Image (cartoon, rainbow, N blue to C red):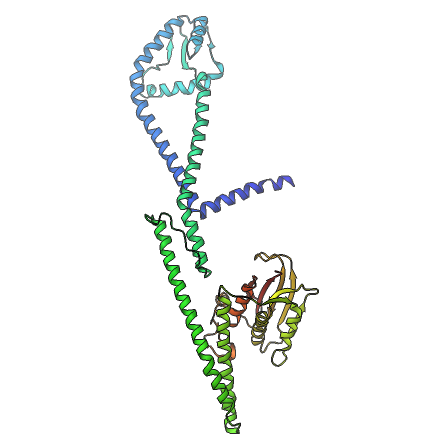
Length: 457
């Protein structure tokens, strides 16, 4: 069990690293800078090593050959192990003697390292058919090979390597901090764009160094200007809708009164009833427009009072025209919520009217489910969950995301028989959000399902 679970943290770390590399601009920039620095350092070191090694080796070869002759003469012929041992102790060299009478190595453990170092000096000699400059042959047939004893320098390069690694990591951390500071305005621009998308224009995006802004500062100022223009356009639209709605109320009321005062003769009755229906629809449209603007206002004040949702649902269903059949599933011991009864009644009525309208010709009745919840991933910690579903034909995926938008209707004909003007679900969404809840529409397969969550407080 433990063996199977062991790779999971590493796998999660790799997934997080891949995600950061794919989605984070600052991480990609830091990685690019580090790789570029390492590549430049490697290219510089390789080039300098090649440039210096060739010239230095050519200049040092005659001096080294003369020095090796001196060391070989000091060991003597036949080779003296005592003199070779004293030489290896006095100088940072290794000595290896092989021949018919003497076979001796001053540093047996370093033989492989000596061979690599010696081959580095002698590969050019073999290529140019020159004698090996670190080997000598005595008169009695013994071969004396010299090498460099790197033991005394082994610890210092290791320390230098660790220090270099630490400096590289420190520089990487500084580069990441600097890049993060440079790209911090991108986070502020992203947050500001999200606020503007939600319709919140109260807080503009901060502009760094407004007197001398850089490219990101210019971008932030441009988006602030765009947000201000959008706010002006939305305010103008809202003011126009409110003005039109208010101005239409009086003539609609007078027209309805005049229509009701018409004589109820058989010749005028059909036209009179049709005109009254159209006037009622126009009145409802004006009422919905005014209510949508009130709900969308940031200064909305809800008239909250303790409300039993089960009782309110029963009242709304009982007040539906024609006493339609609606299947109810109401949870037991539902808590009393602080709600605006008039607006929640509007929400329930619109949802049920919409479900009944799309259940025409379907044998299965629409349903409403009300249950208590303890937690929701949408942020509502506890409250009540309302779900209204129909079993009609539903809509396609392209229209599903737009159903709660104002004046949107999925049918292009805009016929009155297939629905209202497209404000019902929009009002439901505004009511749910005004109470601090959430609103979601999904496919019911078949039909549609609308879910509303209302918090306890």
